[in-house]
Amino acid sequence: MELEHSAALDAETKIAEAPGDHKAELRLWLRLLATNTLIETEIRRRLRERFEVTLPRFDLMAQLERKPHGMTLGELSQRMMVTNGNVTGLVDRLLAEEIVTRRQQKSDRRSHIVSLTEKGRRQFARMAKEHEDWIAGMFGELSQNEFSTLTKLLGKLKTSVRGAIAQN
Amino acid sequence: MELEHSAALDAETKIAEAPGDHKAELRLWLRLLATNTLIETEIRRRLRERFEVTLPRFDLMAQLERKPHGMTLGELSQRMMVTNGNVTGLVDRLLAEEIVTRRQQKSDRRSHIVSLTEKGRRQFARMAKEHEDWIAGMFGELSQNEFSTLTKLLGKLKTSVRGAIAQN
DNA sequence: TGAAAATAGTTTAAGCCTAAACTAATTTTC
DNA sequence: GAAAATTAGTTTAGGCTTAAACTATTTTCA
Image (cartoon, rainbow over all chains, first blue to last red):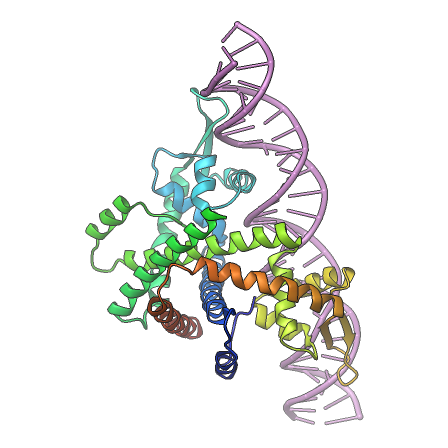
């Protein structure tokens, strides 16, 4: 996937536009992807540097933080948009660090509830504050108006994508 | 990272807004991330299903396709926004499938040029066409106007992010 | 009620990805 | 021109991620 366009290249591709091609759509996607990668890579770097934590672990903790009573592995995997097996492994590692607990449900013995420990909650709180500031800093050059328009349009795009996926 | 908000939750968090917090920025980031993940996961799925290829391999081929004379490993890793070591491994696997070639530069014996083989070019052409249609299909619900506004705003955001990263 | 289907989670094999340490070659600098 | 620094790429160890196959349990329904 191309992640960066020179201005010159962008101009060229515009000229090359022809019926039946979708260069503009492709360009929008590549720009979305590049922006996302840029932010994500930097957040990973800072999380590691400041807190020696990975983004997936931070993400999992963020999910649990909003559910004081915990969450099943399946619910976690849905919210994190990853597979069950992935969550199993993450939880194993976080268990070893005593960031989370896992306990079997009495009512359904297939099911397990994962929750943050007190240590996990403390650790997450410390990280979340800075994380929020990092994000805000990266969005700093957008005006209030641009900011809310972008939020709205991304909402629309998300809906459009969901539609296209559901159809298929 | 939270990937989906219910409408109810969004309303709540808006009410909770207070000076010094950045919930709105966080929400925009989560929305960008979710949209990106949604698209990327579906593209990976289709590439695997239709062509038995992974997204990183497709991405690498896409880079090479635009440079008929090939590219050094370093240039590839920059454009793909991944580490050198990552590219070394990807190229090893694509070499084994005879999708690319790698040859040492005479002028600088540390440096190696990677190029698509004829087989690689043919294979990529076949995939690229469909890939473009997939993307266009996902963006279908956006009007022309929304589409170009989103492209412009993402450009701005990208610049803003680059600025924040460079500062740090 | 008991067989079949569905669900929750785990395991496995393989690929992706990174940071850090490393080798080899080239460039800089004194 | 030789030591030092830089550059291109590889290797290594470990975490992340997936699809597919699997186990255990619960639900469905004939």
